[in-house]
Image 1 (tube, rainbow, N blue to C red):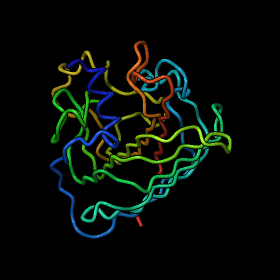
Image 2: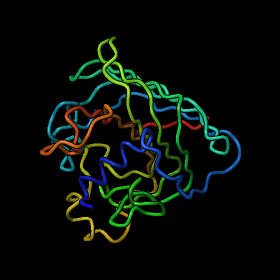
Image 3: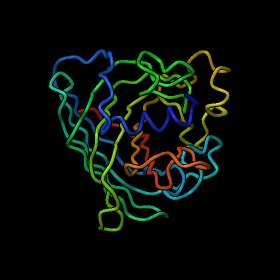
Length: 219
């Protein structure tokens, strides 16, 4: 299976019944907020929504509220963002899996099944990650219902330039260790409609929303 197919599978797991991941999910509730300024990585309908060189970062303002119970595999995520690509709202109340304290991505998927953690980023320490499904609204109207994936990680994208020290999935084996700043923390939120992979897009979907926050408050 190629990396494009693995990306597709990872982002569709909420609705395809993939097996549970092995996680360090602990007891108690995880609650945090991401505050503006925030940014979108590439326009939702562009060809590249990972933009490793930082050239297609879209700055804006927005907030994200996260409340999760990893042991019970339930919670809520509500995110809003306003920028050059429109005004977005993401609502998630359905979770297939919540994982805490794991390495994700990298050439081998980190600590979990690589089907759930494809090589779209260098390996990065992740405080909490979710896979599930929800609703995405654009300019006040429902844009799609589909898979949603959240990660709260150590800093992997430069907060000033938007760059990632990474050259893409085809070069994943050149990054055997984690490439990140352990002093920083970032929230990543991605979603796309439920559809099959499409060639020529990264990730391989015609529509894909990728939001990030660098200001994170634990509550």
